[in-house]
Length: 421
Image (cartoon, rainbow, N blue to C red; front, side, top):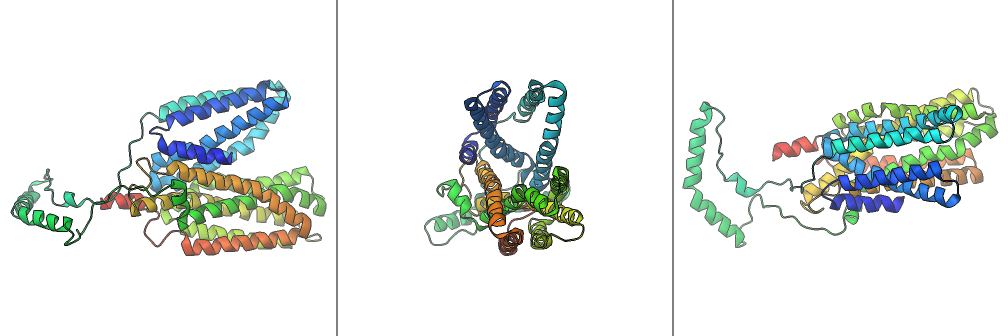
């Protein structure tokens, strides 16, 4: 899936329309669902799983890029909160609904809601994606526009000022031409030079060379590795240490996941106050919780309650961090485009940035259970908690130093750039 994320990010940025990759994703999703429903051999099920991964790669990259196209940088925090909430609702409700349908209607009936959702998805995507994308224009000020007289007068009170300004432009026309010629001959640089579109090499390398973007995806990967790390060790640890049953473990994971339902609120907070404040707050809470987890040992009083509180704090911190770092990655891409207009070509690098972002999520999901299980099995629960806490502390330091830039581009970037132009 990782290579598909990068591939479809590249395709999404080169295609003038999001429609074609989305249709390919629908075909892949429908085919994989059909293979799961009818397949009874290992090769068929493997093909179904591969097609499912292909479809997921398209949804994560092209879908999130489309969201950014629609809402812009000012609203991406809240929008990413809604997507996070939707994913959590699907993860929580899917097994429950599937198990209920399987018990009452059988195996094949489980796939009927999936096919219905695919049809609804087709209709919605054709309703949303109706226009081709237009090449992005670099957001820079053209000096030639500054000498062009306005063609419209707002009210009568501005008429005298408008005529005077037009006459001044006519009287100074020769002076402007001479100044322009002298600047072209190298005698004097223009005050606001016209930006020229240029290519800066592979988009992925340009994105990874940005400290803001790199910190955002590293933080997302590591935070996701913490939560998935619990998937591999928490149930086993609480069973061995406190003799918790499956219901107790399920309740702990439910407590960990439920705060994600508040992701739209967290995203709206990020849109208003910027990325730095929720990122630092979330990492402070997460770091403290990870260090305190080492206190959950055999013989402690009320272990379920204390673990539940720590899982809740972890879930809240992740709910704060995900929209913040998703918006931070989008702001980093926009910052690169403002500093070097045209560097990403006519259609920008939104899809490839989300491809790398999704790679970070997938990479964190993959390595989290591996290193958490290894450390816990070899060195114990306390060492695992200590290592996670140290890693989270490093992320906190990087966030304090780099996230949010230096005030050049953050929460109100889009509106600010439009006002300047």
